[in-house]
Every structure is written in C-alpha cells, then in structure tokens.
Image (cartoon, rainbow, N blue to C red; front, side):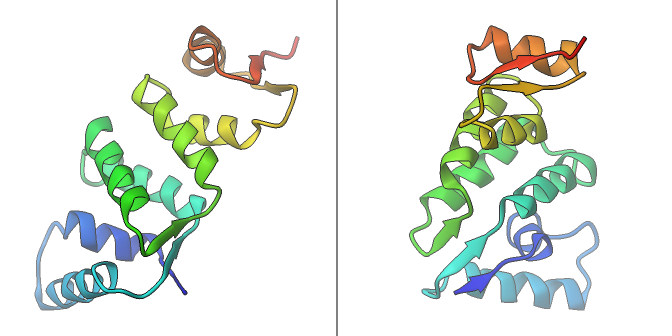
Length: 139
C-alpha cells in the first residue's frame, strides 16, 4: 500500500497554476499512480490540507471539493483513513459546515458532546443540522 501526500492529489485533481516541464511530469506520475491498480491510502489530515489548498490556492468551490472526495471514496484501490468520519464530514460540509470543523466533529462521534467557542459558524450550524454529538459552547 502506498500512502499519498497532498501534493500528489493536488497534481492529479488540480494540475498546477504554471504547467512547466516538472509540473507536467508530476501530473503524469500522479495520473499513473491514481489510475493504476496499486493499493493506495489517504490520511484524513491529507484531506484537510487538500481542502485548504483547493479553497485557498485554487479558489475551488465546496462542490468541487465534494466531487474530489466522492471520486476518492468511490475508487476501489484507494482506502481513506476513518472513512466513516470522512463520509459524515462530507455530508455536513455539503450542508454548510466548514470541512475542517465537520471532520473534527465527525471524529468525535463516540463522545457525548463537543466543546467549541465557534458559536455562530460552527456550534449553531451543527446543532441546527441535528448532528451528534451536540456542540456546546463552554461558559
């Protein structure tokens, strides 16, 4: 099994701003790797970084990132760390939560509650969506 870094996924899904000879070689190598038959593994921290890169450097939309995750999750040769949490986070992200918040929350699924000081952008939205565990704001 081969673990993939964020830059490999970025080259595969996004290419590059400036496609020079080195970037073109990396794109082709990423294509061969991701479309080959070798077993691949993606850590959820890589997914967090990929969302950040897509949103920040490439101005990708929520839908574009969700499409990338859909593809990764559907690829039979790719295993994703803590798949249940990633799938739950993707659903919450599609419903308006920031992906990082959604992934943190989904990872705490066995907890009684999650504490966060991010009331408006996270706690209220998560609770309005009925996500478990409830998100509380410490007082």
